[in-house]
Image (tube, rainbow, N blue to C red; front, side):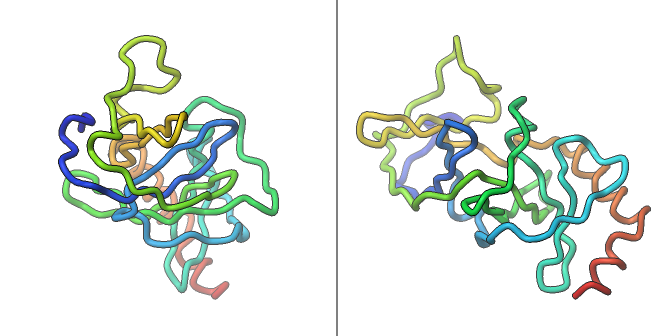
Length: 173
């Protein structure tokens, strides 16, 4: 979705990955958690840090920094897990994403959102919904539904089932 298709004022959760500020539509955010113990999953893609037990449900946790080609997220007192709902071809998947810190909910009107630059962008443009203007700075609005391919998440789900992680998480409640 390009910025020109955004027709109404929307709310975005802002968070930091490295030195960059990103945002996702709050409609996709289920909750924000303090960093909790993450169970590693054998043979998972490098960006998948593992799974957490969220009230009896197994939730995969990914490191967006690694997905974007940056260094892995280090655990600090500010590190959070943003639990989101991702639409994959009509199926909603719950996913946790590590963030160096979570900042604020930002209200942006359509006129404050521009299309991402076509040249010189650090991120794949298909992942970017737009650039939100906040004061003199820009916030990169992620189209979280497009960041992960259906194949990647399906493979991650298969690994969880094959390794009995769901059973292990249920026992650790």
